[in-house]
Length: 242
Image (cartoon, rainbow, N blue to C red; front, side, top):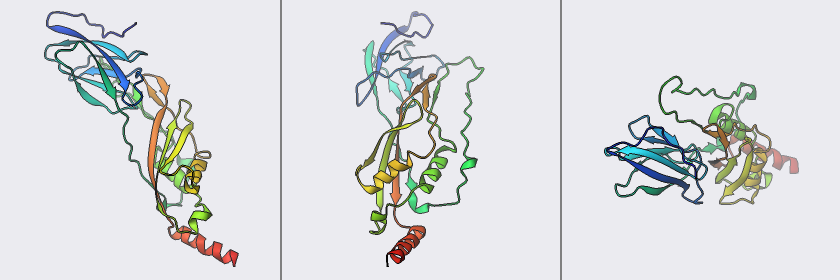
């Protein structure tokens, strides 16, 4: 089994640790996670099986393991263990969309993708290379495009249905939407409308971890209910049926 080493030798007063990083839920290994000794620029990254090795001095008690798809936090290194496993968990997203604010004046031609620059460029440090999925215009651009493409299902509109649905999906390695689901209801007209919107709006630039494109899970709590615009539509529908 091959490990990625940090490149500095083991000397007196140092100890070597062997660590495996896994997904807390699936127990699968996490590849290309960045690893840095807290307070230093010494680092490495996990291999395809989730393993890495590091040499620590007696005073170095914490490491930081980061991955774009997982929560980053300092890890305490056990004093009495040379090898151990670290489970990482995925973050809980709270990026709300309030459909009561839409439709609005919205110019799709102004949507541009952000330009990311490496702040460590040119420095002799361990570079943490990871990038979140990017949507043209950022998260606000996604909210605006989503909200302005929402067509209230007539069956729900006429009942003045309102509520909140958690929309979850994965941005895959190509930037496409997959595994689209709604909580709590994935079969109703509102959820079907959310799924339809994702078939017509632009793709994302996929997430990257150490230069490799990866899948990334997204979640949006979405509030919906008739606003002045849709209340006017209700009157128009009723008038047309009379």
